[in-house]
Length: 114
Image: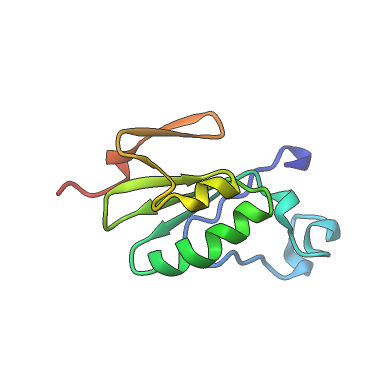
C-alpha cells in the first residue's frame, strides 16, 4: 500500500482506466500488480464457489496472500491463511464475526435476511 492508497474492487474484474487518464504512476501499471501488492483477497462465491475454492484460493495462499471466501450458499465465511488450511474441507469457518486487516465484520451483515 505504497503512497497510502488502498484499492478495493468490490465486483467483477479489476479494471483500470487507460494510462492517459490514470491518476496513478506508470509503476502501478507496469508490471501488472502481483501478490506483493495484495494484503488480502476476499472472494464472494455463490455460483463460483467450486472454482474459487479449488483453483483461486490455493493460488492466493501459495503466493502468501491470506484469502477469505464469503460462501453465500452456506451463509458463512471461510478463511485460508496457510497451505495447511487448504487441507480443511472449508478452511476456518466463521458464522458470527471475522477480522480482515484489523476490521471486524459481522457475518450476518453480508447477507440479506432469510
